[in-house]
Image 1 (cartoon, one colour):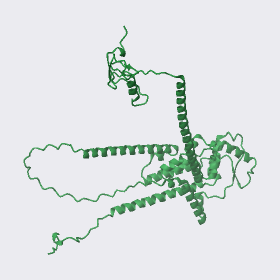
Image 2 (cartoon, helix red, strand yellow):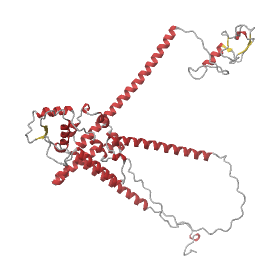
Image 3 (cartoon, one colour):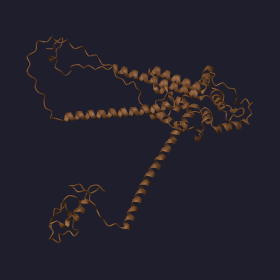
Image 4 (cartoon, helix red, strand yellow):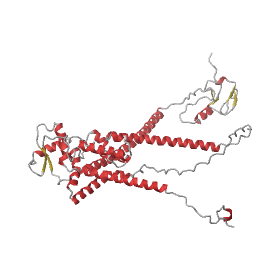
Length: 461
């Protein structure tokens, strides 16, 4: 025997519209008939059940029975043309999303590439301004294909390093490590080709010959000696000014830049944590102030009067609190930080003109002032293109004896600028401290008051 259906019920009650119908009634106003869509005893008109399904919140939600939570099975007539149209609609929507996401990705890549190119141009300008265009054109060149992967990554980040830190000698430590230990292959081929045409005996030609000792102390210094001098000067200056050594100062160059980025993220997270904690405390205080239903504390039992206590000693006079002054330097202007190469180049030019004006020979030797640069040439040698040691010695010779050592004047100029800036800041802080310590409350007379109400030494009658 088969199970009964909704048509076998004598009395039917729609749980949607609450209409009651008997099986004798052949026409009840609902031509679609009745339906039993679940596993409980609820029945409904077909039209009412469809209306309830259509009114459910959320597109694509699975309709279920409100009592037994059994999912409804919806039957419908499927048309092949409608399915094709529906498939085309889904494909068009997917294509539209892919087009929008692709356009957004292309736009992000375009903007990122332009921004990266701007950062790379600033890093290139910084290296040219501080170390001179000649040394840059021989060891790096404007062609990015001659750069190593580390230079392609870290030369653009020099701008971020300059934005985060104040102008100091740390910038030079990062810039020195950007220069390779030997020229690129295209420059080496060009030097070898020029060696066949240039007269090395000409006094106007500066010719590199071997052997050349790279470890002999000399002035202008080699790149290693110059980097060591800048590194030690930076550490000594930190010890004198802040009486401490930063970890990023002990690990200069690329490691210092990575540590700066990490410390910046740590500071940002600490600031957000402190801000969130402060917000929670303020919310708790506001909740306590708003809450008026806190019961009053119970009264303490009566206690016998205590014995006479000794008279308390007079409170000591309050001493003025020491002045609180923020010794940290204020955030420099972004433009001032980005103009560090221009500042170094300008200060170096000032030092060069000053030494040339006073004609002081020791100052000119310290600043590395030389006669106008001559042509650079090399002597032909067997297997020089593949001899790494030869080109490393050539690079050291290039820094020390071949080109005008503008980096010495620019470094000293940047150092003088930093010392002057810190001295002005220290003087400013000292003046602020003296101003705070000199504060006094101005005393006024009792003008406008009746002198008879005052306890005066000489009373007024």
